[in-house]
Length: 290
View 1 (cartoon, rainbow, N blue to C red):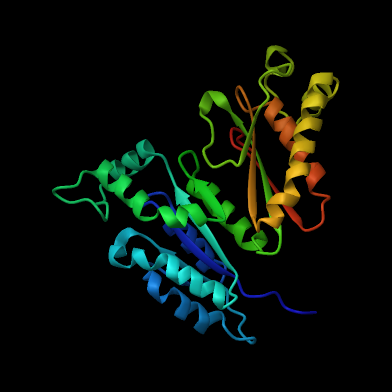
View 2 (cartoon, rainbow, N blue to C red):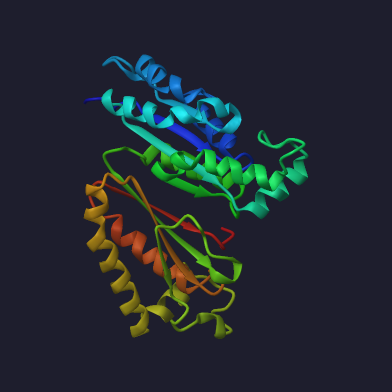
């Protein structure tokens, strides 16, 4: 039985978004981790750790704005990685401005780019611009605005286990529009037009994973039609994303409160695509406290 190739992860993102947690999770999983490595040294380090047939190390590094002088070396470094045939997975962690401002206010930490002439919000915007190339090429973008540290750890752990460069991971996420739309989805479907179990007293306290709600929705032709059309849409475009070397696709399904309709359809979609070869499926119900 041949062993799998070592994994090489690059973690980046805005300060305060959770990238330190991401790197800690990978370290706990046995990755050889380096925090804030200058971009110009990435190819050399990757070649040393991963560049021989006997290596069994998984490796992860973080690149962030603390080393502004080296950010300009990013593009050249990634070209070097390609020439070394090292499979690289980039994970970019971010959060919205208000969330980052709140986190810095609560922790009273200083942003690495703020000074007497640069306000916190200006530093946040400057950092995003500096890291724009990494954000653009990222295989996986994670918005932690509404994500707890525990949830982020689970996401990173799943990525490390299923994020092979030769397979595709499909994340189906249910959510409620009343709590805000997720910003890290590739496709978003609004299912608020479907019959709502919320208005039935016996179904209101349940969710889309409970049998009575599933039976109620399965009996509605509109629900079946919506499911089939979303399923067929994703089926049609999957091969094109795979051919484009995409590793991760997030499909968001939203209803009003994220309890019934979106949960039900997300469950059906995950169940259907879990039978596909070379596709790893994940599911997240954002509004459920399970």
